[in-house]
Figure 1 (spheres, rainbow over the protein chains, first blue to last red):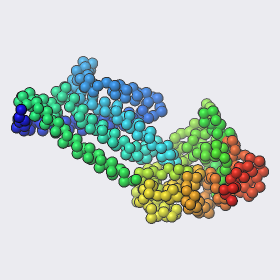
Figure 2: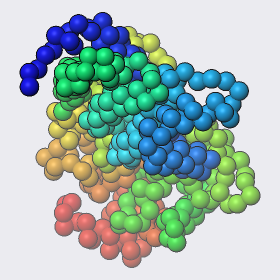
Figure 3: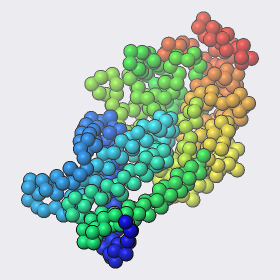
Figure 4: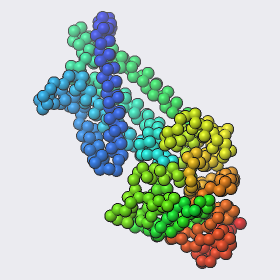
Length: 219
Length: 255
């Protein structure tokens, strides 16, 4: 068999539109997932049960159900229960963000718990409030330890964006499918999609290594 | 003039009574060394004074003002904002330094001024440099804690506490985590503070240092004040048997 990428290159425009769609949903889910994850993680860390119990329920629910099912549920089931339509972007973003929040919450909780109690003592002895100690002393140190795990989450979020194709959101995989079905070239089309993902993700990982090195300058 | 008055202070961890009714009055300018075997409650007493631990019972009054209000149990109810005020007035230096490793020496000293006091950066920086110079570490301002020796770390920690202009300083075994050859530089800094007439409470195992720096010695046993008096009274002519036994067990190393 002969590989013929010409049929893929003819559809560069479609792939560019797909890449833009992938980047858009990645950016939304990265910001929403990791910031909501921090809130839920703080809830999991809290000894106040009114914060701890809801956070735990959230984590266990979204960690133990498949993202694809969540996306389909938000897209097809939620509009039946609520009086409005939900776009593919919103449905997919909700599913991926909430799932990422659940996983990253556990990363945040573990990272925060790993900081020695002496750091809390040092901060409190200066007269810091809980929030000040968390923001200025605990989180910056925890973040350094959590960075490898959070990078993994970011990569996972990027790749989970392909699940949005299940509700026909226009992203790379959706466009790859389209090209493959129009030109009968699944090998070339899906190879191209995989390569594009690698081209995006590899620099992202390099950037996280750079960040890790920068954060290590206090050692 | 009394700065701190402790009445009937108790603290229990689980089933263990760590403090069993401590009464203590500290006058401005007094320097009190708290001695006692491990487990006698001396660190817990110190940590209750700036509310790193919540007292289980009894009252603490700062400048004549009794802190907290009565609750339904023996444990008083304290507002967070009240405790934050107290901690700014009562500085603390820890055995393990507890420097912030992600900040330089000067960053550590500036942190309370910036975050807690909301001081502008140039002002905080100038103040922090002054405090670092006072402990002899002006040239280490931009060094991270990981590159400082134990003695230097503890001096930065002292500068960090001093920057907040505390009315009283608590030292919780400030030299116990140090290599023997580094103890002297930290004690010298504390001695200099003593000569300025600062009010301080010091938990320590350095009996010789306690003798020279303290105006009063308190010997704690089983969570209560067993004996107290001037350094000469307690260290040279202890009246109680347990004090004598404690001193005997330390003398072979200290004198």
